Length: 204
Image 1 (cartoon, rainbow, N blue to C red):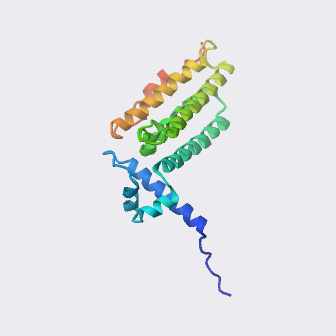
Image 2 (cartoon, helix red, strand yellow; image 1 turned 90 degrees about the vertical axis):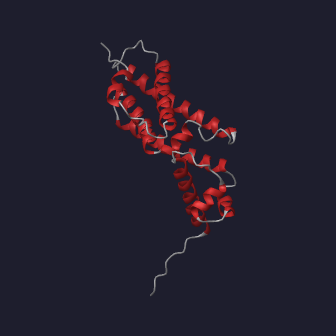
Image 3 (spheres, rainbow, N blue to C red; image 1 turned 90 degrees about the horizontal axis):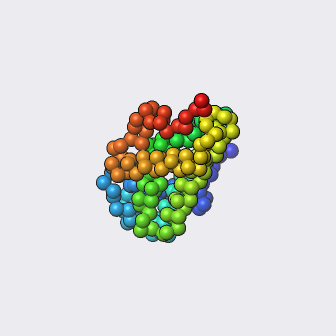
């Protein structure tokens, strides 16, 4: 009996096309010379019609929204892993910072989204969503700081909220440097030196 290969259904084809479009968009965002992102440019890059792009994403904003969802999902899967595997609050803080800087290093185009660089002329909802993501990341750092305080590993006099804000400002600053330097300034540059300054002092 001959086994017939299963043909991909319409839903699978649509999902595959969406992935191709998002990968093309991410690649264009990684271009140091800031390529102009248009539906026409994406269609040309993928060698498909503009209508094919629009059938998957009616607007650029919808594409950016899908990339934001990818960023959120990726980061929080890894954050949950850190929270479950690292029994030390201080270690959690260090690994959270490494995660946020390392994600930027590996995903230059996504970093432009993380600092709202490419969202200025898009739907305001996208900028709000990124700001909310920043708030969630800062809250995660604050939770790790409170955990370290409860373990009595760091001074109980530390203001967890203020310290978490300081750490998040450092991360966002590194993201900005990376983008503004056309991806030449590694977000993890001087990490070994700076980690001792950034991490909260041990309780003496």
